[in-house]
Length: 417
Image (cartoon, rainbow, N blue to C red; front, side, top):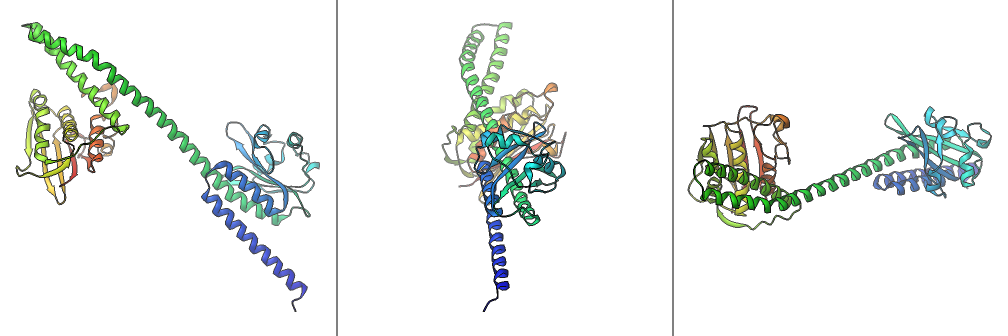
């Protein structure tokens, strides 16, 4: 027959086992929940149940003001509680927060540090109180309180238990805050990107009509004039063509970022793509006396791409090489089979790219040179567009350079048919 002492011990062990299971369940739930309001309610409900008390509350530090505020409390309206600022000085919660130590008061309403405004506001009388700090790394984010124990008084064992709950709670609340902050930042960036894309699309659309008129009149003047007037008209046409190229780039960037760029793939030799791209830039290269070196075989290498968009990507790479190359230097454009892929490259002997900036040159509007001392021009979106087109077709693109003054090579990998 089991003795009363043994029965008491078994009940005690069973109680501790159930308590440990509750703490494990709480830890798992806290680590799988990132909704802040849900977390706060779960913490207070668990503390109330485990400690066998009337209510529990969470007070967090107001980072904008040196005070605490009620973030949650059992059976109370969070909005009403949040209206009550709890001072760090001259309050029980403030004492726990400042000393970073648990506090047990079994006659709380008689303590001079008791802050009666809360009880008056929600019509709740605090008789016994246990409060513990909520640590996160080397800081204290707030205080977890349990009030009015149903049977007996709060003790050191209760304080240890509540401290375990508070430690888990602090980590969970911090994670939820970080996620919320990140989501807000992403939403702000998303909104800014939408405004920018709308502006780019609107500017591109609105500028095309007057630009078309300028090009039309300049062409008419050039064909119906002679001497100095023809030269002036030619300069207007050149400037207008440059402006149209910039507008096309702005439009292409907007379509890429809004997933509106359609890709119509065809099987064709990569050599055809390269020759078309070279035809687009050969006059620009000739004006700077640049030599275009071809480094690819004539035997066809078939790829499955959108010809127009892939030519645009290569033209952007070639224009970039022309812009940063010294006059009378060489630009090499090549292609070679590499297993089931085709490697294309554009190599220049120009200003080069600092090694720590190689990954940044594809970022939109990024310029290696300082903005207020620029000498090479461009919006800084040509490489961004090239990257979007190539990656949109299952390829990859990257830059290589040995540093400033050592030239640069842009390489592309595309699947072979």
